[in-house]
Image (cartoon, rainbow over all chains, first blue to last red; front, side):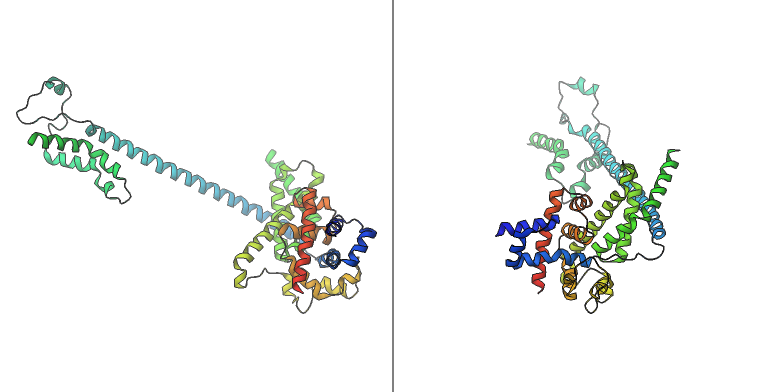
Length: 185
Length: 196
């Protein structure tokens, strides 16, 4: 029974004649009887609307306007995409440049400097003379300013800043403090 | 030189399509969308797209069928958006605008239906046209079908197209078009049953 219902639906779709067996089945099956009526009803709803005077001209004008609008949209989208790409590229490059600067500023302080306490005389004096200590000729205030710069206080105040990134630049100073406290005690 | 010839070709194609195929496209779009303004917009958009992608057309003789396929694709997109809007805003009372609504379908059917029920010349059997209410319900229930099912039914039965042509316009395989037809009929029957 189900097979015949499917068969009838397929014949309707193909537009094939229902056949004698189909007619017999439709007479006995109300669902199929309703189904058979549908194509005629759908056909009855189709209209041949009169498009109105000047249809062809109206369509041509509308299509030209549509082409222009689409072209404008495409140009605007392309411009926006290019601007966005340039912006993203600029931000990326600027940030990278900042990082490089930060890294070069750090490199002067990241290497542990030899600690000399008052009255102490070390064996590697000639090496130190060859590479003079950058902190030798600067005042305490300048040193404090450099420390604050290297510590990147503004960056460290950001709530989302990783602790590791706050701590890393200060590692040499931590080491220095350890040495100093060992020397004092 | 090439630019000029391409522009000429576009202009010629636009003129040719706007004469015959655009009218047929309009009829299809109107039956699918039920709205004159949307049907005209769809045809205009299809003409614009056809002109822009004229390079994709290998056989100039296939231009009308190619154009109708573009129209159908645009109408399917409209129908899908309409279904989505109905799904999103239907609970707030939004319904798609139909020209049928303008003519007061509840009291009076569209001109075509009126003519048919009054015995105007028609290839359709009169017993199929006996009930205006049934036709009105059918028009409304067609909105409940999936876009491709609705398009398949309208093209196959409303425009009397063979299944291969329906498949071509929908851009699907023959078997898929048949499936859309069979499922669309079954769904429409269920919707009509619910309506009663």
